[in-house]
Picture 1 (tube, rainbow, N blue to C red):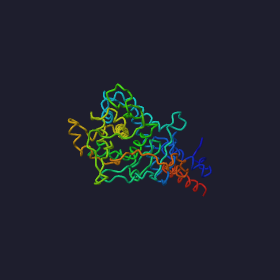
Picture 2: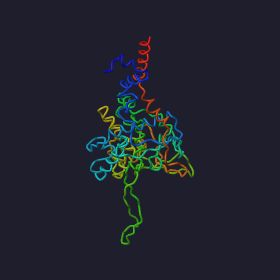
Picture 3: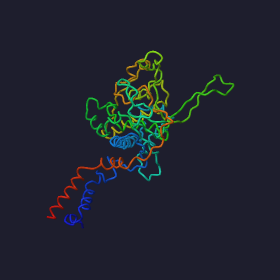
Picture 4: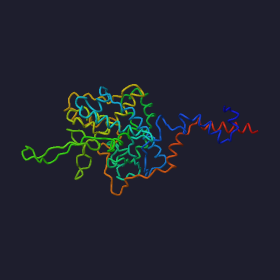
Length: 387
């Protein structure tokens, strides 16, 4: 049996390591988990171009927190209020429920541990803004915290991402705010931003793609028809509304689409009959906000149902630009897509992230006060016994 005296008779390094392991296991850096999510995952983050160590840490932690969101959302209840508001009435989307469930399940597989036969692709992360998109937009229209490159597992993180709160801190804080705790946009955090980008990856998010094609049937009454297939998920737009115009008169005064970012627009594409039944199922933001809502429901036992959309007259909604814009904070550039083509000069494959950066994330962020105190106490005891 290992007694305290025999333990302290061991070399200082060995005894301190043993005690630190006992105290740190479960929530310290020695244990393989942080907030219940293992960092030793099957899929890895690569690249890291122009990201410093602190930024890589926030990217990695956001990725782990995103896995927590999708684990809460993987079991879909088609009779639930969140499902209705973010994907639409069951009878209207019955042809797409399987696709929605599959998308959520594939996203949740990023939590699979190393060695699991089901492995999502590694994700190339970067901070160098190769598409010069991070500064697009303004305070009114918003700016992207991150964007996907080419529907690949390839994400650039902008400076706005690094100001987003950690998942649990944000949820705890907003749930305690009795004034706004029912507003889903109050909970937006770095995990929600990650979730939207992951749904854009073609190996994760599948969408319905409808394209016009020239009709080859000579006896057909029309020259054009449409083909429907599956493709990568992008961002849906509001239908039947007046498109926005930038405040740039002259040749640059062109219409811009109203992309379905934010809870107001996400719910409109799910609930308005003028939208295609699959528009919400095609929209990455709907999955991210749905997963966020399900996580709050799991942790706090209530559904954050705001903003409440009571649509009694769709024509009124179509004419109300203020309603379409939503009153929530903007975590995207509402006038621009967040999926951009990869430039020829942009590398598609990310190199392994340096061990110094990854160790800082896995060890530095997991060093607990308890483990540090254990080593300190051991050293003091050894010093006393040696006197």
